[in-house]
Length: 275
Image (cartoon, rainbow, N blue to C red; front, side):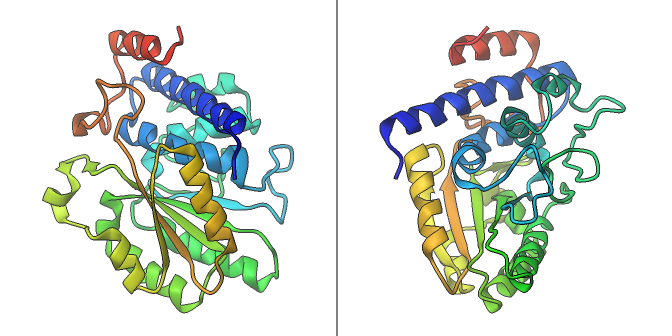
């Protein structure tokens, strides 16, 4: 359980990460704003409290693994990795530039701390299942965490992987679903309905939890419960807000793949208390 001081510390970290994400997207003039901001509170708890990892030794065999299945939210992951110390924060300014190690989608061959290449939606959960199985075969205590998008669960491969995870009783696997309700074409339910999400994963044999995806303490509590649960993989359905943290980005599908303009960046930074 987190004390109030730690909760505040993590909230402050999430706020700074939002600032870095907005700045790098603005400099790049390209990238995904809405889904990066919606996922940041979950990523903050994972990278700065829950997961065992060592930026000075990215290939530590017993580290926990993280798979960003919704690879277009790479700016959020890069901000976390830079703050954690995997590479200089100054590198964030090179997002999507030719020759940069920070590509539009995560690449394990170029960026320290990235476990697998992602971006083709629907494949990340299968990769996470493979990592979890490998850890079991190697008798390691490491856990695998995977972040899905809600539009992404429209992909059939997600459900094949969900069956496999339950079949092999991968209790070292924890998946978090960024349920912000919007995708590039609009409302998820209008494009291709995916609800009820929790009951579907429950029917597939998973341990299922639902949380407010912007409540640091609630996210931590769910991750703690997942780590203690045995015999099944855990799905944490995190209800989030697309564009969270900046009112004029929130609940808007048109900011799915649009970076902030100079004016929007100035207004967003003012709202976040930064310049």
